[in-house]
Length: 340
Image 1 (cartoon, rainbow, N blue to C red):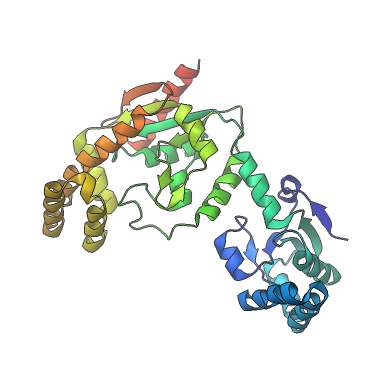
Image 2: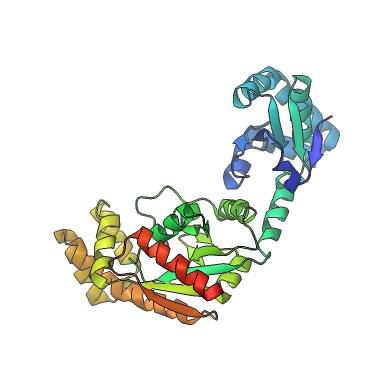
């Protein structure tokens, strides 16, 4: 018989995770690292669901068997490719018939199978419950162009715990933040990604997080985590304006001019009509430095407003002229001094 495990234990055992829900369910949100292995495609799932509502469970089961039966050999062959070691972990929506059916098939074919109790729904309940777990957070603040993300990456290489929300959201957090990035995950999937990271952290050690608004592009930071961020100690870095402008030019220098103009137009109301026109003119002239300098006026005001709403202590350090690695060494040392 397949082992039935709760999420904590499910993630500790070996094996490829097979998500046997429909492709549409998988696309909306899935366990990070799970492979889509649908028992039914979207249309077949709809047919079985309609049959269940209109004719009852027995007829729906018979229809499901009729649909899946001819594909059983293909399921086994595909599973052997995905899990050549014959170790698999399986789940569906609620840990019901779909996962049980695939588990029976693969176990019969010689696989070692583990089932997730409660399925994806159980995973989501477990994932969302993690966000309220207290964590010692240090927020790395700094105005746009300060190189916060690069400093966080350096801190990771130095052994610090870091939750890189922007990397998980595929977005840098501004109107321009999606340029050059992969498509953003659904908000549901973003929370799944955050949860899997949150579960790994040592609660006794500090966790570095970049200062963010509640939304990163279209993704919302879980409220329980955002509440902890607002109360956390902030280490605010600053750089010269010249460095910040140069940093923005480096990041967005290869972006399409029309994308840059569209991003500028999205902040028209807050940038101001005159400054918006000047910025767009600079962009069309290829003067990205001048355009970036104008845009910083808007983002500096926004950052200052967001920072003033925080209730945690704020400690400021100038990292002008320092590389990301040297800046990371500095803030790491300062954070240790503050903790002691």
